[in-house]
Image 1: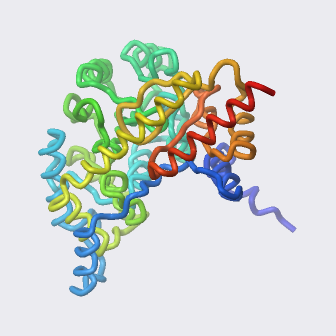
Image 2: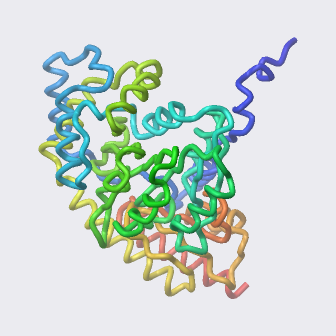
Image 3: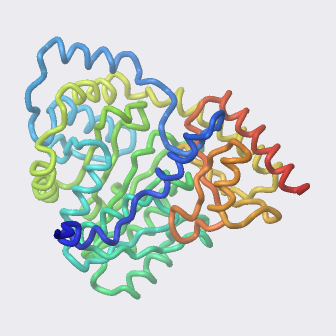
Length: 391
């Protein structure tokens, strides 16, 4: 009997199942555990968005939408991006995707040829590495632990010089999952100067753009529009993870090509959810603000606890993750520490090494959970650390 898995796409051999999901599934089996693992907002979708979806159903919007998205949603997205971030995309320069995940896949598969190299600053969300690998590209992982978890222009230039003409893309995620760091306009301008006039695309995942705490969101697309492919959406900004609406923005000439992968992969995104997202980006353009304020309070509470316990943390300025270095007198194998913390301390935090080079000895905690849960989780963490220090 033939083993048919031997005849699958060979690139799949380079992709492993998600360590993050495996850990989260493990943690969920432990009674009374406080879960800081997944980036799932604990807020519900705002009421006006739900009502827009209900009205869409009553209006029998149950047929195929235009492949690149309804005009109403693309118009609202165009206005939202321009007013919020000075990102200027016409409705025809936007594709509505099946979540930001499909937008990333569409962009990566559209750009890469087998053997092309993609610069990915780490620690990073592993999805980028998997997509590049499946597309036949070569991920080039750049450890940014020594530069505050940011890709500096010096690091970028050095990597491009070292890797040569095979470099086709750099992937930037800001605010960052897992570190919560953001880039200032000056930092983005410096990166744009390195990339300008080189045949290298900048794929910018800005899904957390509405969750900035200490400065306005800035985008590389403002300084390098002709080489930038923008990915965003409403999952995090409007607590709509399950609605699966992403946005892909790029100059018209690129969108015409990117739409081929989108159309032949998805055909189109559900019409009802697009009508809901049109309300999110129109009537609900500021829906994220109260959520952002709540996240900021949660962040500060966790940071104070971690500081008291001797953990070392780069203060996150966006998203809803804290990336913290385990106190030096505790177990330094982050995977071993995280599993023991879950089993014996009833706190689930993802091992930092799951996010690539630079993540060793770190933990990632998502604070997209209620303050009551956070307070109990921090109490559990204090008790666990105290026991570890006396054993």
